[in-house]
Image (cartoon, rainbow, N blue to C red):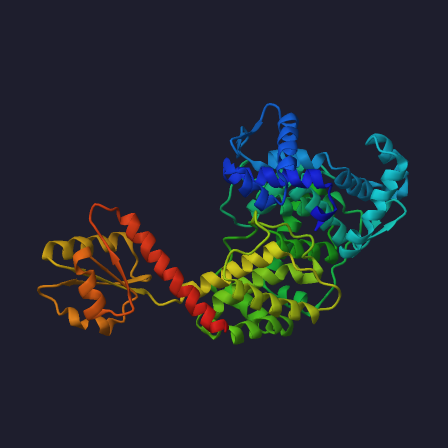
Length: 497
């Protein structure tokens, strides 16, 4: 949501960095389509990126193609530097840190080479954003519930690299000790720091902003979640590590805050303590919650096949819906990055699920916001669950000699799972090929000379493909994947009609 308030030039350059980190060479027409930028804008931003990163990025346009080379392994290295140049993000940090409203806005304008009027307009433009965050401005300071301010600080840090508070080495040591104490298999690694930065800064804020009292609303679902074993584990690790290291006494509100960030932020705390029974209890807790059932029930009504995979659906819904706890969905950064703003899966499924989610959101208190990247990920989960219960593709191979029949039969188990492919091989001169229609095959593979016979005598209306042994097994894989996908999409469309 913050992206909508950023300077358009910065957001456009960030789009290009994300896009070319996935592939280094693209036609300019494709880049224009994916970013919504004109050819003139693309040329301009390429020049600006080269000037901004003279030693670590090289973007060129030649023969209607754009190529880009990076020297750093993490795209965040580039994104954070671009975001650091945003006056909007720097103003948000200023308004958070401005204790007791002591610094006038003219100080910010002067330090960022802005006119006073520009700074005031920028501040006023942020009011709708803060309102969506359920925060507000009091003179030149952001005020509101402490836990929401902390989530905003963590979002600025993890998604944009804007450091309202620095994490010192002592802070990092405390975080590591806290997680290690809880039974996790992960070791400290600089290559994992970005993956858990949102949780790390939220955790550090429990002692870095301890002077600000924090209170978490005691809703029914939150009280139920506190009955899980993990809440007591958090209390013990907090007492043994954080309170001891930082010489603090945590209140009930502080402990509830630690639990809230555990639920909503990706982290490794006590990851080895979860047993199948703990997971079952957690899923049952959600299934029995009235608000959660309002979302679960219509999805199963829409797709009755999901009853077979209800535990998987519940887990996917738990992951999706947890950001709606206390209306925090604005703050939770995406753990996945979709370059395209459009969902690339089944559009009927997307439309149907979106309608269900929007109707569910309308029943929740307050104004709710749907993070489309979170929703796209949930739709992907649902599609995958449906694929998992799709019956195996029935594939029949018809050969005119014994050796050919056995050659492909022997190869198949090495490349294809019997969960996805139900494979049958027939030797024309020995096996009863007239039984093939009883198998109701989805695909028949045979040699070119046998195709007319198979079409007219065995499998009318069934896909028949030619195979030659000088082709790689990859071509067979691609063919069966295409047939399986077409069947899945047809079955799903039929369910949704």
